[in-house]
Amino acid sequence: MTAENLPEAEGRTGEVGQGWLATVLTIFPGMFPGPLGFSLAGRALERRIWELDAINLRDHALDRHGTVDDTPFGGGPGMVMRPDVLDRAIAAAAERAGGRAGPLIYFTPRGRRLDQERVRQLAAGPGATLLCGRFEGVDERLLEAREIEEVSLGDFVLSGGELPAIVLLDAVVRLLPGVMGQPDSLDEESFERGLLEYPQYTRPQIWAGRPVPDVLNSGHHAEIAKWRRSKAEEVTRIRRPDLWEAYQASQGRKKEE
Image 1 (cartoon, helix red, strand yellow):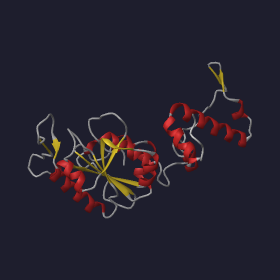
Image 2: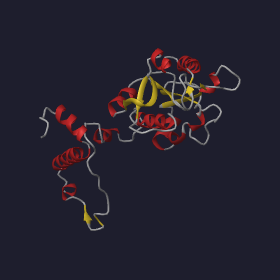
Image 3: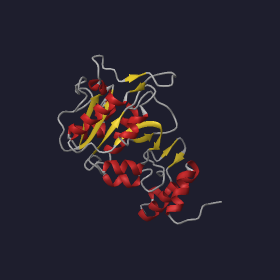
Image 4: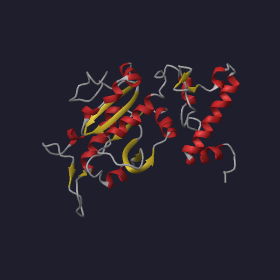
């Protein structure tokens, strides 16, 4: 089901089946599937390789106004999302998931940086439940009581957790069996081997006075593979010293001076 025909009031793809299950807890269920309704993820959603259950947190409020937040103890600006309301939503989502709720993840700048290894782990499981915060965040007691995994996309602040949820789901869905047309290509992508990806080239042979490297036209697959590995190492060393150091350690090499 694509973004065009997803029922906005429900924010769901239908009844839960057997695909990888993404449960999203949000006050804006109409934001889903959003970009995930297109391209590879959208086609996989239609084929039910993965499924989406976007649950409106306001449906689990304790009053008729759908209130999910309140003023912070100790004063200060903004509002904080209530633990009792969110806990009711989490419990309902777990029951609906039927054993496929997976890890409970909350997006926050103070969380662990999301990486490809964690994405692979999530893709190997039955699904994940993503809590999208808003306002000043979530009551700390909920995070402690539910042992929620806190995840960050980077050292910056967004208005809420919906965009990080979409990013994480896109990264996971493309790893699910049957989604990628050429699954072998996943092995060559950035981070899969601890390196950034090597440079890519296509036609024309010469563009703006810049030719394609000769080795790529040589037909010598071993030489091409060697060149690509060398370039991947070079770009990683220059652009991501942190990744390069970790890669060297994984290869048993000494840290460069």
